[in-house]
Amino acid sequence: MKYNIYLVILIILLSACSSDNSVEEGGMEQETNLEVLDYNPKESYTSEEVTIVTTGIDSTVALEAFISGVNAQIVKIANDDIIVRVPSQAVSGELMLKAGQTEINVGEVQIKKEEDVLYGEYIGENQYGEDTWMAYEIDLDNATAANLIYEAKGYDQVGSLYFSNKTNTFFNGYCVQCGSIGGGCHCSYVFTNLDNDLNSSVTICTDLECNESFRLKSYNNGKAIYEYYRSDYYSDSHSLKSLDFSTMQTTTLRDYIQNPVVPIPSSSLYIQERNELVAFDNAYKVISLNDFSTENFEYPGVNLTSLYLDTTGRMFAVNNMNTIVEIDSNNGEILEEIYTWNENLEFLQYSESTGRFFWVDHTTGVTIVNIFNPENQIRTEIIMDEYIRKLFIDN
Image 1 (cartoon, rainbow, N blue to C red):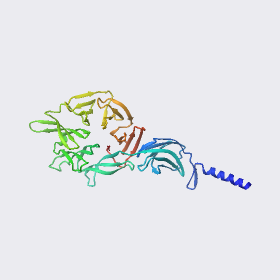
Image 2 (image 1 turned 135 degrees about the vertical axis):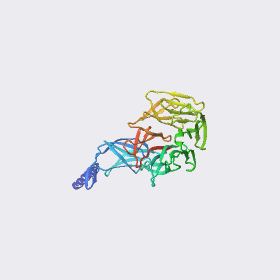
Image 3 (image 1 turned 120 degrees about the vertical axis):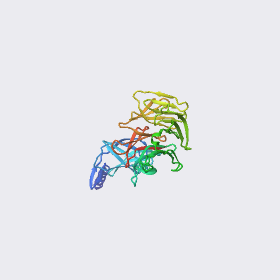
Image 4 (image 1 turned 30 degrees about the horizontal axis):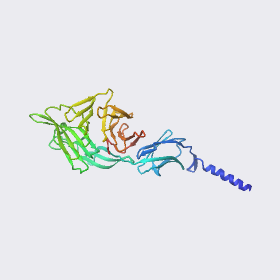
């Protein structure tokens, strides 16, 4: 009887020892006091980050993370925060931490379906040493440029590059190497509709003066608007033209005898419903394409770049190079400050599908893709393998 009592006590003691947070690693027992206090966000897209707030992290104990059983990359550990990236294969399910052999259930994460397709613009040399402009689909999960979707190669200078995500149309201006054709620098400006085929292009000009005669003003809402200049021995002529991406047909909006009466800033936005161009050039300008009248709205301390107009009429911009704002498209008034960053915001892109903002950062010498989700106020950084100059989003 006494033997049985001792046996029961021994079993209880052994059970207590095996239920503590110790792990066996390399033949030695290591104790982990890791405790999860909270985690955010609890709803996320793939490639975004979830921060797990903990206490008791031990750097000698190996850490792993899983979402719905799929291994999730631990991006970094900052103080007591464990930052985990949601893998593309993950579905809604439990977020688990594994410290050595001890598994800790953090909680459930709801995974939203990824709807954004992200493209990156890259300029470099191909295998023949030719300067080449390339557009890649970006694989955020693997932080790399995946599928090559467009390539313009063999040009001495490449510039004026735009992509219309709504119409899947590229615009690229380039110059053939000086002296290679007739002893001069021959330039071309070409619109290419990728929905049809790579040869479905409209060439605006291909002469020696092309680089000086063409000025792209607006490239959105299914339409490009540009100024075109011609000179001969008798007179100079200026035209304001538009190109419809769906038909690839060009229309002359206005002809000028001298320089354009109404200066139109570059990077203007076309608002189809009002037949207006809007831009910021020391003031917020609204230019009517019906009578070419202009209204200026001035706001002290405001300098807007990267204007973006979505299909519902909401307009976003970057103020003073570091703050994402929503503005009134009628007069440029700032309606809301959405996010402020401590570096310059370059080439801001907005996703109408998910309501997120994307931009690239080159301040550290590498390409970092930034994703900001206003819904949960989380900004995700993804360090890319390749240099990406610009981002484009296909909504």
